[in-house]
Length: 207
Image (tube, rainbow, N blue to C red; front, side, top):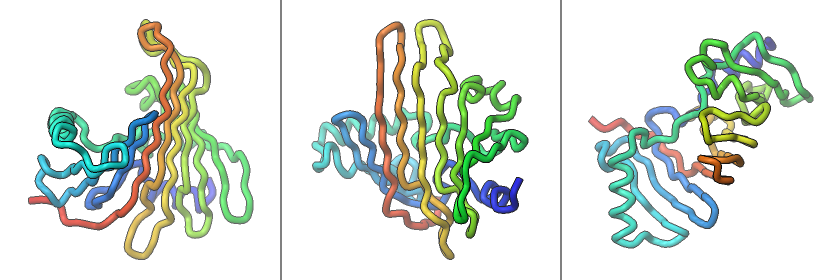
């Protein structure tokens, strides 16, 4: 494993690290939502709905949003994998130039045992060499997969891009996308989801 790849992996996180407030805009089909996350506020008020379909939300939309956040078991977006899930012995160089390299890899057997989905995915990392950091990753389904009866995944592609690290901030996610097509309970289904992350600011956690 090249030294720059090892260094980039040491610093890599597929999630927003703790202690950062940010604005998140989610686009799903014709629907868009812009919200602000601020961990310096008490848990019940950490998320604020700013825009719904590019306009200020109505009182009814605000109430629905607050009910959804209160009932959500995982209010923060969860990463599809942790860096500890990656099998370090599976890295294969796909392409490279003087500034960056692209590697394909898989996941540890024990990780795919606890999350069977990981065993069906191929991970590709694009790594900036100097300074060393992960510019982006993509997860793609190796072949059609049926996790449970009535559900078949024909296509799944998840991509996430990151900002370069700076003197006072780590590398942070900037744009993610996920594309799904298949059948859910035998009904053809597809989804194209895009999420952008902006206006990051370091904050102190709520006490």
